[in-house]
Amino acid sequence: MMKTIKLALIFALPISVHANEKFGGIYLDSSIPTEHVQLLKSDFTYLYNNKSELVDSEFQSMAELSKVDGAHMYNWIFNRAKFIVGEDYSFTGRNLVKKKGHIFPATPVPPSVANRMQSYAGTIIMSNSGAELYLTGKLEKTLKGIRLDRNDVFATSPRVGILQIGEGLFAERFLINKDKESEANKIKRIGTIFHEARHSDGHSEHIGFIHNDCPPGHLLSGLPACENYANGAYSLEAVALKNLLLNCSTCSIEDSTKLTASIADALGRVTLRSHVKTEAQLLEEMKTYKTVIDFYEDYIAKYPKVGAAYVQELERVKAKYKECDDQLKELKTPVVAKKMDAKPEGTFVETSVEESSKLMKASLTK
Amino acid sequence: MKKKITIIIYFTVLGTLAWFFQDPESNQSVSNQSEQTTKNGEIEKKGNTEVLKKDVETTELKNNDHFTQYLNTLPTAEDFKTLSYEEVHHTPEIIKNGGAIVGRVHNEAQEDVSKRVSAMDFFKSCAEDGKIVPAIRAVCLKKIYKLIPEWKVPVLLLEEKISREVADLAMKIP
Image (cartoon, rainbow over all chains, first blue to last red; front, side, top):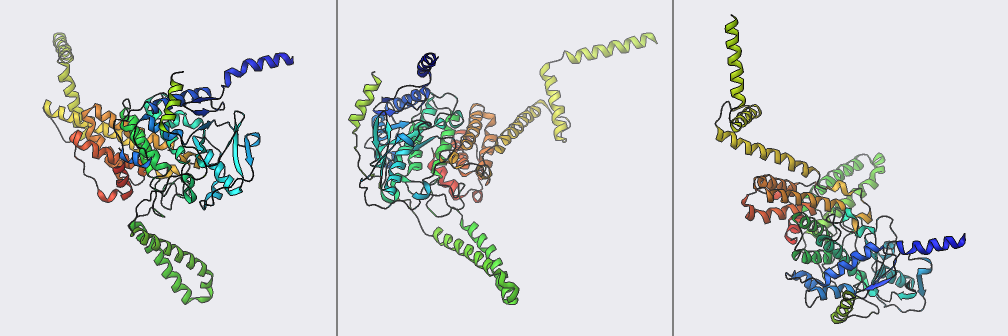
């Protein structure tokens, strides 16, 4: 009986699981479903072969590329996304490896980091687990890493480049059209990879180009889905998408419009102020608060005994009024998006364009 | 008496047959004309040219209705309230769907010149609608800027209805 079960298991394995492999030098873990591995390989090949005859200058400067062509764009990704694991890969138990005694750079961490390190349930599209391992390790003063193919990969820098991809990256509802292999869908997925790869950059308080909470008045107010830098993950995703869309030869009007909507969405996450309210909105709010303040001040003065219960409410409304006043002052002050230094902290090896191209060519000629 | 009845029936049948076998186009015109008269309630009898002109207007009206339906399905700020963090970290599905609708309107009007005025009206309504999310409004506004010279359809935008955020975004997207 046991023999039969063992045999059945042996025969069943090749159907659902594929071996770990490297494509263009990027490690693709066996936790990624076979179909997704094929799509990823096809995406990287598309990127590497991209001619980019039309160049978006903002993309070139933001990604600090000496030249915008397939080899350089692929190299940019390669240096930031060296290991890709699937949604089912567990970052706990035997897969999580730790080492004491590592000396992390004495740089500050983003103030919001401690709160940000929570896991979320839901459809995973993609996330930069390497940056997260580095950051939590730095906070806990323990070098963290994961076990991949019997090797320990330690996050000595956010540039370790461990990305986790999920069903969402390939799900029809998130894609541009029904053909997963279409150019428009490749562009969409590559845009997401550029976004996550950007989280492998940065140091100190902007390490990993970590997202900021969206300010009051923003559509996503309170959610960590915005950034207040001019060259963060959303900005980079937007300009990368723009550059690839400019050179898309098979994108239909509908495809292009959907991709443009994605670009607008990403750019809309770049918020430079603590709010997105207009001057008219703020003045209107202040007018409303002022009437309430006047009423309570008058009421408390006239009826001190009964009015005492409303002192706290008066203070609350006054605070709201001040908040609006501060935002109005901020609105009247000119502001320019700051470009942060993308140099990552920690120890890592930078691969040249020639080296990554050699790895890609070897995979393509296999 | 019998002879009179036979003659009346004969002419009635002949008249009906003649009406059926006349030029189908003119038949169509008559039906259209009567439809127009009913719909507008102001035209009693008009020639073929005016009937044809009205036909185009009717088509425009139908397209307008069609595109207005699209407008109602664009994502609003309200739609975002129900989304979780995972759904908004990367471009949410509803933004992609909104882009699909705007793209479909553009595509339909690109292929059929007679739909361009209606499409421009749709883009204008979308760009000026404060309930629709800024990313989609910016896409609509950019469509107007890009398509005015190509389609040669003028649009009067109400500046006060277009926020700085939407105007800035439109300038940054392709």
